[in-house]
Image 1 (tube, rainbow, N blue to C red):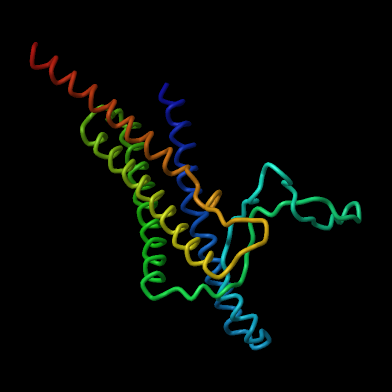
Image 2: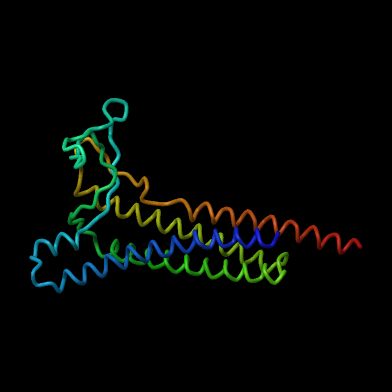
Length: 218
């Protein structure tokens, strides 16, 4: 039984680690690319400006009931254009964010990274406690509650960060036949894991209270 529990814990840990590594990878790649381009003399001023204004936008067709494929792309295999509908684009647009918005976005990204790392650390401590057969106690309840809260906060940071990006981009960018959307810009993995951790924590808490009441009656 403990072996199956360890396998499930490792799977959850991999999911949490993936969320942290994915965020770190894309942020790191963006920083490294910008740093290289900034010091590359062969890159012209316009290209550097486009890179600094790079934004990821999610598109949704405005009229899904009429014609879903509003565009076309070249199919290299068949040598012909095929119907298509854009879903996500990387564009270079000057959003002209104010200082407060830039600081808020940076702080949200940093907070998201910190809380995810903290959640992974708490989960590792929980796994260690389980392997030591130290399972049903209030310390683990607090760990689960803290981990669940951190994961929900992480989702909130991602959601608010995506909203700030969408709000700034939609002022200066629009595509005919499409509307900007936050779909797929925010993953619900951290929210689902966080709520699950909070539910498990309350189950543990109810069990511990029942045990304490039984011990008192005896």
